[in-house]
Length: 222
Image (cartoon, rainbow, N blue to C red; front, side, top):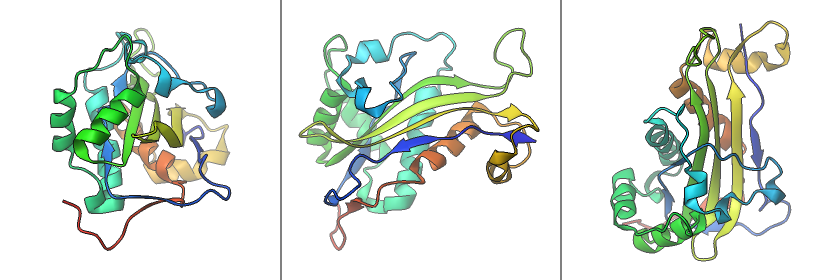
């Protein structure tokens, strides 16, 4: 049987805050490195941190981790919001044209420049600091897959964070934690790869997506 930990997701705009409507949402390339955000959202300074500090080299990270996370996040949001999500190839083209100083520029700078280039009013910033397949640790062939990432919805013109979700889980072979039985049913009773665990994580993180963030309806998005 398989046991999963709990995903962590916060909705700072909820609790009486006005609804935020958007025309275009764009998923930025996911930043990959060993830096972990503070689990206390009030103390999380990731969006203000220099990109070079977030993307500090992490030898254990597979080369496709960032691109896979971007694809999974984009796919989920595209299925949910349709034409309001900017196509991934357009985002990648815009990102390639942006000039960032990694020693000084932060994810907020990235959000601002992508927002201006793509005429997007929400940018999804992601970071991933663990992306490990089962048995990837030498000497521990049965060590389960483990994935950890954070996602932020950011208003590019102000840099304001609208929402944050954090996923930090390892798949475990255990009978002792039956409280996560529903998670095991969702994923099937099998060992997952890191890619499969990441896909599960994206769905879990976005499940409590705040109702106060909504697409503008009745408009054609070019």
